[in-house]
Image (cartoon, rainbow, N blue to C red; front, side, top):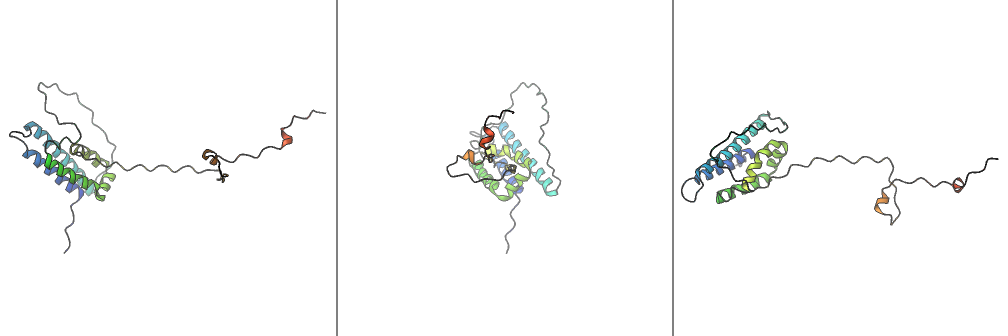
Length: 195
């Protein structure tokens, strides 16, 4: 009997985010629990990340995804507000103190998922996925793997052949091109007087 195929990285990522949403919603209300507006903000942020990841994964699976340069929409001037709206924390791993057990477990799952070859290939092929996961990794205290380094240009070919330097030659003198032979001694003397 063959084992069932493992779900795709995007599906597993969606499961991690949905479990976080359920954990945050369960922490709302009551004493020593998260305030209602903060629960709504966290839940909304997580659901937005999940929707964007699912949409991008759907475009990739259908072959309709294209790489476009990242463009930020122009910022509109904020309308004046009388009440200060609640804001999300900004520190690294800020969700862990709020939902300690559930967030720590999902952070561990996310680390394992990011270390798998399929997920690494997805991140390398689609920089947009890396951009979508950055806020999720930040709130869970997970370091997002760095993007692949660009291939460096090969060094230019040297026109002069390499010459073996004698033993004891300084390193900077070993790579210098060979010098022309000295002129004969007669060519260095004073000019002859015209007869």
